[in-house]
Length: 121
Image 1 (cartoon, rainbow, N blue to C red):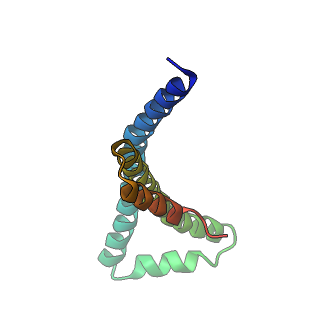
Image 2 (image 1 turned 30 degrees about the vertical axis):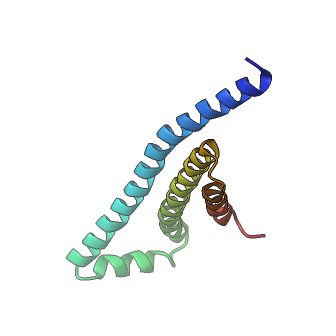
Image 3 (image 1 turned 90 degrees about the vertical axis):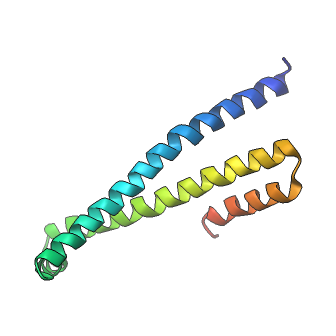
């Protein structure tokens, strides 16, 4: 096998591994973050809004406030990142499929979807 063939084979193996393992991990991460937020909402609803008020009030306390704010930011970040990761894997899989079949428009679409996920400069 030529050097190019070995590189191509290796890239395909890595892509399949990331596609299968990464999807499951990212999906679980996002679902867990959403579940935690839902439980918080349910607790707040069950207490008539008192839990939410206590959570918001705790943000102004020294020490505890930093922890409280970071919990909320962490859950939001986990949801956001898992969604972007799943969309990136999907775009990569579509791009590979389009490239292999010679579908230029499909490849361009997958490429543009991947580019849209990158941070703006």
